[in-house]
Amino acid sequence: MTSIGWNKLCACLLRPPPRAGHAPPVRSHGGGVVEIRYRPAPQEEEWFAQTLRALPLESWWEDWMRHADRLLADPELVNTVHQVLLKRWPQSATRGRLSTPAEVVLRLLVLKHVRNWSYGVLAREVRANLVYRQFTRMGLRRMPHPKTLGKLGLLLGPTVVQQLHQRVVAQAQAEKVIRGHKLRVDTTVTETNIHYPTDSVLLGDSVRVLTRFMRQITEVVGEMGEKMRNRQRSVGRRLIEIGRASRGRGPQMQKKLEQGYRKLLGSTGQVVAQAKRFSQEIGQGVKRSSDVWQQAALEDLKKEIDTMLPRVQQVVRQTRARIFQGITNSAGKIVSLFEHTTEIIRKGKPGKPTEFGKMIQVQEAENQIIVAYEVYDQRPADSKLLLPAIEQHQQRLGVVPRVAAGDAGFFSAANETAAQKLGVAQVAVPFLGTQSAQRRKRQKERWFRQAQKWRIGCEGRISVLKRRHGLRRCLYKGDAGMHRWVGLGVIADNLINIGRVLTARLTAKKSASDAP
Image (cartoon, rainbow, N blue to C red):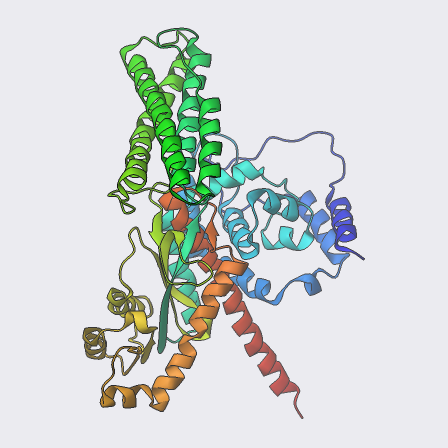
């Protein structure tokens, strides 16, 4: 039977029998509405149990899911999410409707990043799949709306995600999946969700965004104060002229290009000046509304304009510097109006020499378990990351690694000496410059070559994180969103690898017991 057929069957089986009416949610003494897990409803539980018994559901679970189901039932993990949900609003613990329980929120987010789904796809797949309903503890309950899932996901900030990751690592150590004797570390780039930046497109975005804010203000206040002039059509023509001129060569085309940019910069300056006047008039009360909610909306739009104006002005400055002065590395350069902290990173990749995002560090122990990850606000030199990685490894696992491996970017003589003083017996970081005879001999030793072979696996782990868990491009917004995206992807990958190791261990024990 096809997967579509199974989904239809699951949907029919999960449809509860008709009821005379819905009783209001039962509340505990004190009015608690933020729950750890769903409260059992005898009729629904029995119906769900009958459905599960009618199908070979146990054989449908993937191997990693069985172990992840047990690990995610850890009270410390669930309580971490529960405490966050309690603090969503000042009276979340006692007021409002019953919320989605903490364990369901945790499992839905894990499943989302295991599969690299959007919130919409997550809601659709869990709604129509018995295995996912059982894994996420949804049962027969109605699936939350994708927007609700997105709001719940935002509550788990970078600090909370780090706490969840550390607990999963502690569970892996308790299960003896990792012992902490080995450490390998590498860095990569996770791109922000922006289009390829060019000066003309950034100026076009600036005009479009500011014009949109001013149009929304005009819809609220009407003809009060400054009258808006829409310059988007003329700016669009300038963008077309610049695009045509940039494809040509020679001094004549360069002159046309400069003329196009002068006109575009002039139009952008006029829009910036008008946006400033709109903001000032809202502050002075010239543009106002008698409706309380509309006035609050005006104040929010003023904040949006005040936030965006400095970024637009920076785009104007860096465009003038590049086009008319030939300065490509302007101070404070930005490549996106919305993800303004995005960095320009060159790591020497032939296929993608320039990337726009944030540099992340991934450090692993045995069995491909990621012990720690880091998202850097500003890209550091790799050579400054080896010692902090060893110290963090010791802090998380309580042992100093016997072997520490990294690529040539992590090398420095000071790093090797300091790592050995910390207790690392074998520091396998190659030096690719002019080598002494002693250095060449050291890098040809068997332990060094074996450690470097093992280090290469970190490249494969990064590839899996990008392909399977979406770390190639972050779809969450802002720096906090980048931390959440990377952290949840790492947690999902760890759970799969822990499940793989524990499954292999059980299979080996079963084979040994079945042997004559």
